[in-house]
Length: 418
Image (cartoon, rainbow, N blue to C red; front, top):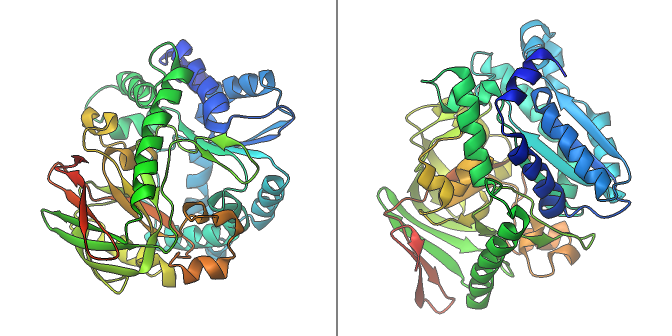
């Protein structure tokens, strides 16, 4: 462990950090005896990586393989890398990851990098590198979005991230405050964390069962700056909390999570909507997003900040300007109540109802594990290199479910479940 890692580790409650590792293995992954684990993390998160490895091996893991990234190495590429290198990515690595997932290896990602790390770098290089990486990552990403194996994402409070969330306090205080916020949102701030997750999953399951029973044709959103109708994919299925992967293991992909979500029909979205929170995307804060949809596609897009980056995102491919996910989150969610902007989608998406541009999840279809890509597309599922969530829910947002006969049922009123 480096001196920096020791310094950061000393600021973080070791008991709660250990609980987070335990929850990641027992709730997030539900790792099975003999199952391998592939783990990615920023190097500063090594204390959490080690605890996860301990809990994984105690649970009977076959082989735990960590892959670490480093902010300084990432910056070195942008400052010293040859121009041609920004159109390349480590295809061999992602092909290997895809092969591992096909062989029932579980996937765990720890997030914690500085969300604004690339804010001072050439945006064209950032966009090129992102596109190359997205294309190379497709073989592995398809295994994840198709839920072929159990996977999970959790977070670690790195100093560079903490200073973005809490810019007005010293770094050590910022790390402690971000750690406390992560632990609270992840439900590991008290004893009985595994049981707390079982209770929370039961609540989310009640929501998904009600929505699946309704079989809405569309959702209608109204609120300040928003008049939007989102058609739902044919044969869509709502998911939330714990879900069962194709390998038969029931896991919680995101910790924390407050959402229930499904697949919209990518050709049946009309109206206009504005964002309710900023979107942090690859070093750029995109704020004040306002878009107009016609026949499922964004035909006009503006932003008060980061508009150029937003438009580049929308031009990634044909599916980038269409929706791949719609998610419902009550305004009273714990993350919303915290009042924090985390600059990280794992947390910020759980503060408000949101939509996602790009790739859909095949899991969010009835019998989705048996559908071909062509069938998913025919039922309204979207395909893209990207999947980017952004928040549209507020305390003033009303949502109605619309049945095929035009009848309406209140789903949310003033940002809360109706």
